[in-house]
Image (cartoon, helix red, strand yellow):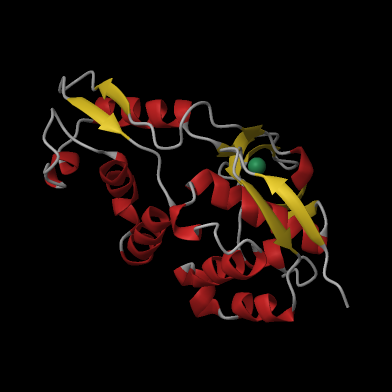
Length: 228
Ligand SMILES: [Zn+2]
């Protein structure tokens, strides 16, 4: 039987051909260990992107996320049901999203460009770059062990130099004032590309309105194995 394939243009402009997942890829997702370590997603990308010259490790993080969504849609369709918990009243309820309607932000300019900013509090000049698959692996490894390191590590990996010094210490980010950290993250958001996976939610119980990150886990890839 011939598998479905589709040609997609990634947010950075790279073109790729994907195929739908088979029971082999579903097997990767069935392993909690592979799912948690990020290895399942890695293997799915490697198997389902048909061009062998597309370097998965070197793809921008925004492109990789777009690919995961495209593979999921080709395999199971656009409808995605998941559970959200209201932070205000604690109620858990079902949400439904059409994955084809998530806004996609295209990359403007060169994917290899560095963007130089001056941090408002410390006054340091920081050129930064966009993150790639190999950076995402480091983040996934840290996220498992010490999730509180996430922001610091992400800023560290983005950074090319600090005031002209390319051998800057990771410690610089330990003591980075909150105002600088927030400014830096906003500047990254302004130039990064990818799928906007934050959805607006209104709690049916208490009318609290909030934003939720689209969960990409088991139910994303196994839409029929809903846990109740
Ligand atoms: Zn509520």
